[in-house]
Length: 115
Image (cartoon, rainbow, N blue to C red; front, side):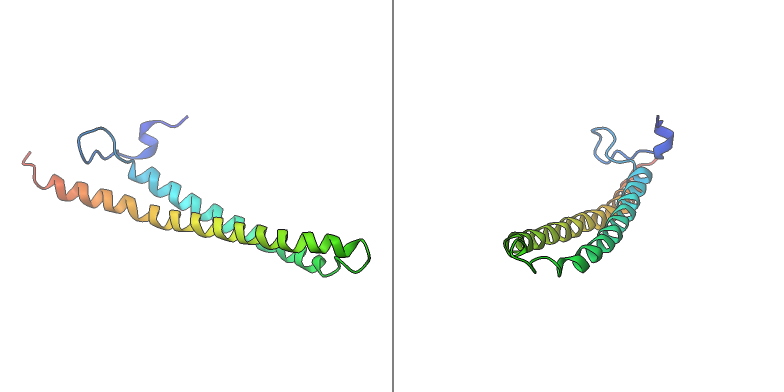
């Protein structure tokens, strides 16, 4: 189980409670980026193997109707996977920008207090 110390110090920007654990958020965005890289690498390798076999579909009388259904479906699956990975990559990229923005805003706001 994680303890609050595992997440680094929290930042509360607007007095409503903890707004972000910057250390944990940074770590999570890095983990997401690595997972996406692994997923894309795995998919690319599997897709290459699938594509190498696809040319053999449809040579016979039973294969032609199969190919007619298979090709559009395979194309759609490839598009969905590429779009999903692209969207999650954008999320990870933008999410990586958030912790430094929070930390900077907290530091700037903190300068207005005289302790």
